Length: 176
Ligand SMILES: Cc1cc2nc3c(=O)[nH]c(=O)nc-3n(C[C@H](O)[C@H](O)[C@H](O)COP(=O)(O)O)c2cc1C
Image (cartoon, rainbow, N blue to C red; front, side, top):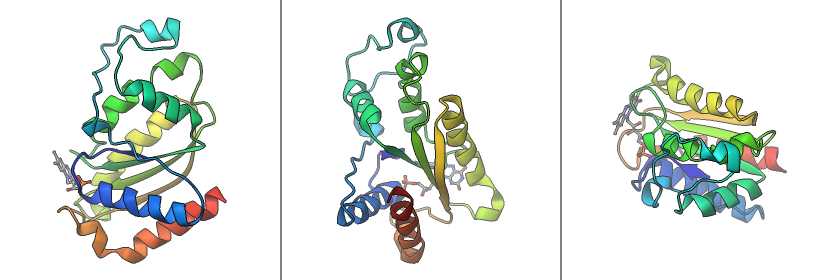
């Protein structure tokens, strides 16, 4: 799971609940929170297109190894200005070393987006579209997506346990 918010808020709580539920079903999961890691911004040098690796030595070395190994990648992003979080975009940009080698081709992805606005205000759609566009660009496969609306303060998401349960059940049944 790659969590697009660095605070211990809705994305954090959702990731931890999913991790726990997956664990009880013997599915192991790691949570990566790029905002709390040491990750340099992509300079766009494009060296990785030739070499397949980035010149920067930082937490992305370990992250890329985990991404390569993972059977499924779950992105969890808060909505920020109708689009995905900056932390997640920085992470995605630094996955470019996998582009030239098609390292994400056919990789399975799940996208879960969170926002404070109501679903019918379409603000969360921009977040979903930006994530699914990334998946399309890397030729990955979106296997599941969902939205958590009306979540503003740190723990709002915990007010909808049935929705979280449903998402966990759906993810587990897809993975099994
Ligand atoms: C800079 C910023 C921009 C935001 N823009 C939106 C927005 O466009 N639409 C929306 O529904 N919520 C927006 N929000 C609210 C967050 O999506 C919401 O608080 C979410 O629950 C935060 O997730 P977190 O607790 O995991 O950080 C914004 C929050 C911030 C900090």
